[in-house]
Image (cartoon, rainbow, N blue to C red; front, side, top):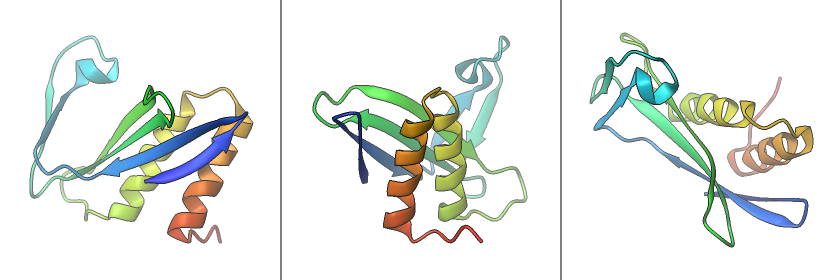
Length: 110
C-alpha cells in the first residue's frame, strides 16, 4: 500500500497480483463480451486508488500480461498505475501519486 496526499485528502494505492482472475472485455468498456483468462501462466496486476477516510474507490485498473510475456510485478504495478491515473484530469493528483509510488518502490526514471 502506498499513501499520498492531494488537496487536503489522503489517498491509498493498493496493488495485488491475483492468479485466478477473469476479466471480460465488456468490463473494460468494449461492447462485446469475451473472456481474458488469467492463470499461473498468464498473470496480472490490479491497482486500486481509494480515499483513506471514506474508503471510496477513486479508480481501478488491471494490467494483464500477453501470452508469452514474462510476469514482472514491478512492470505490472507501473502499467496498472499508469492506466488508472489516465482517467484523472488533474496533473497535480497524478504527479502526487507517481511521486509516492516512486519513493516507496525506489523507481529510477533513467
